[in-house]
Image 1: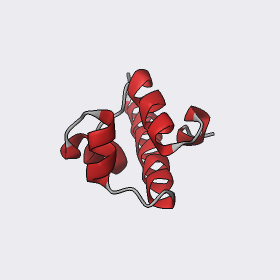
Image 2: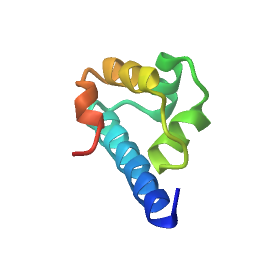
Image 3: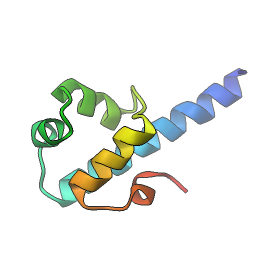
Image 4: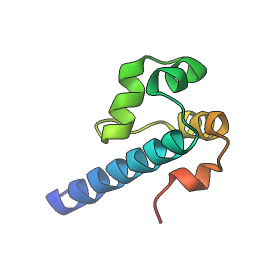
Length: 77
């Protein structure tokens, strides 16, 4: 993977994180509440939202379900 591809991947991960955060805030759910609902550490949700870690597909679906949004709403165009 070249640098341009890595940059695109990083931007995609950051975009997913921003969408997770926006959906969470819209529901007035704290990071800790979402972490508890998803059975993960608070730091995991924080890393997702900051774009430092990408959620697995199954985790993305779980987060979407807990936030009552479509998984598609958590994926950039």
